[in-house]
Image (tube, rainbow, N blue to C red; front, side, top):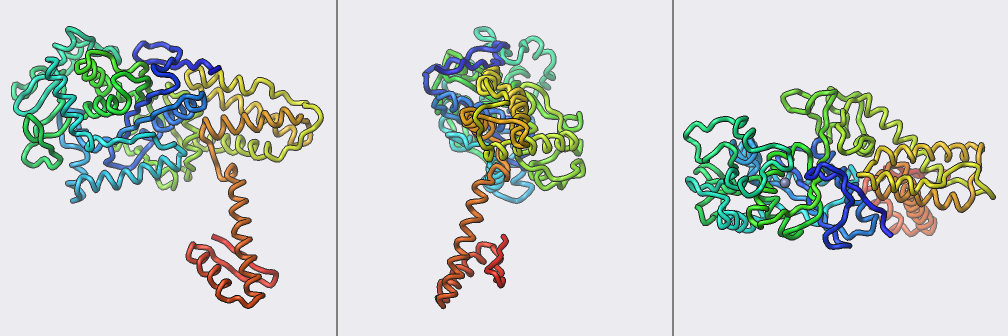
Length: 488
Ligand code: ZN
């Protein structure tokens, strides 16, 4: 029997038992990055949050189709309607093709995600590869009567939609407030009302990223891609849609409106949002000088950082907070996480070498259930980590010869650590990779031993081949009187 997973549904504002629409299949859609700059903490948090969800759902036995999109067109500087396309602007400044910008930053994003041990999604669709689907989606909204054409652009008619549906249901806003708070139109606007948003924008003559459509050459509005690609890959109704809290309004609100208008029904059953990150108590922003990219964390090259921090420290730090809490990054807090992670991983390593006794003097019973219960309570990773720390103390007691553990307990403990530390929290350090490190060292030793034997047999061809090829791979090899030494 599966554990009952409860998740907080932003739409209903309560924790709900997760019941998939088509058990054992689960559809999960998460808004991915707009690829026009290096990945930073704002990318790391949703990626890690939903990676843990993906891992946990898989652990529970579900077959998850995880879609995380790539925004490579249509994300304007001011959301859906105004300003230059973020990617086109970068391309203009760097004198590159927009798709060169996308390729460059996407490769760097993937590398950063791999370093953070974030598993790749099942499908990673690009907005620019789904222009036809987006045009079809606009047609459905037009046919349903919830959009209008103006000067070659198509806008979503929020007021009309709100008569039959509820615009603002996700973010808790209502249309009257929105009409009051959004700035007045100056009379020059193509839009009927300030709350309306673009589904399709006419391309001005200088706009590079443009496609033909029934309404002339243009490009899709930012919110549209997630409606088109989510329903294409996961169906008109699917289980979970995730993203950062900053996307709740207007991005996700507009996505709900688009889907309800086009399909006449709700698409997403559970909406999940991770909270935001601050740096030394401040919002993160380029103008505030506290905008730290992941590469800068990994290298330590930023004036706000006291030292480099490994990807696993960043991951562990993020998981030490519940995903719906805010997280404040500071060098001090990261140093504390680094120590905590080292302590946990040391216990993990020691666990592998413990010898069983006839009976246990340490208490480990119930660890698995406690960790499962914490994960089932809306992915409470900080509680899982605290349970693991409790048991780490017991491991150290046995390691220090001040306690004993039975064979049954030892087997259980090893399995619980493998499942929760490695598989679910996705933590790995060089120490944990120690076993594979050990194997790798032994393999190089073996090769060099064979080279030594070849030399003794005057088989110079083989001996040179091994040395040359290892050197080409970056190894430095030194012959000593006892044999050899090597380093990478
Ligand atoms: Zn999205």
